[in-house]
Image (cartoon, rainbow, N blue to C red):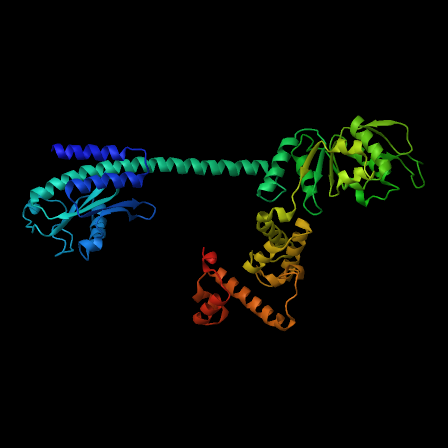
Length: 510
């Protein structure tokens, strides 16, 4: 009894240590094995999601060295033990693989054992009425009294193991819950920060969303920088919609599209008779944007003379119409955008330095599409849905080769070019899938070096065959037999083609 208490104390102390669950179980069951002289043992944990026992740990000799059917009998006995919640015994393992009935002291007293044989005891790992797994031990066959003593000790050890497993599982569940909650809150925060009219979750775009969130509620002048086609106007719209001026006018001015002769009239308005053709007074864009927002796109293209008058409006919030003397006060927020190097323009005296500093209060850089390639698929899905609806088609997906082509392209025209490509592909598509051959020829060039003319036809045929095979495999989640039937080929030929084109079936599984 003293030895049993010492063993239980050692097991409990080991299980309460701060190490990981596998390590403490290995130490605790190792102590049990050494104390009882076990040949081997195994611990199985119940996976509730799968409703199946999984081997968590085995110790001592390998099962095959004990007897040929030891592993099979252990698994069978563990399943029965977990199902009934009662201990079970095989008194003579080499002679019988049939599990002995559950614990019944009278039956166990009648068991005759050979001291040279091997017995297997399996007990449930339970905490109250909840079963966590099973603990099995293989040892030299003992008398009924010896088996009973070992059984009693193993039941106590199994209870200690169950408590340790329950505590660790509870801690793991808490960690999983906190992680899921953290992910949920991050997604919610992203949805709150990301403007409704913008697409993309890349790190580069997250920086843009954060900048919009920070400056939208103020009246600060914003300068949006970025290449042509990246969506600078969408950023301006987002700034206006999230500002206190959202209910007021949002006036857009493309400075590059205005002729130099009328640019001042368009911006500031004119009085009747100010110039030939001015038959009536006309308000300019700044007056129309009063209490709202004006978006000056391509501000670097403004004539140098107009820049001086614009600077006065930005500083004083007042203007004079062309041909007029009356000062008109305007309350307007200015958002400017350019794809030009304004700093170089300032050095070349093409852009006023004081105006540059006045509009560059809060710059926002919109990344090029090649800098946010992780957003391409999300953008593609959006454009597919948009133009499928517009054309009355039911395009559901895009083929893997087409995706590879989109991801490999450098996109000099940015999001605008991507949108045009998808619009073209939707128009050309004849089924519910966009294939690589629906994309523009510029995306289909494998490299800057043209292929050998003699192999062009062969390469094109093989490329088309590979795309059809990948598309069929993707539709059937990597099932080669189903894909072969769809394409009218044998499963053997399908296997040869998959090997030839080095198609990774794991990527196509659900």
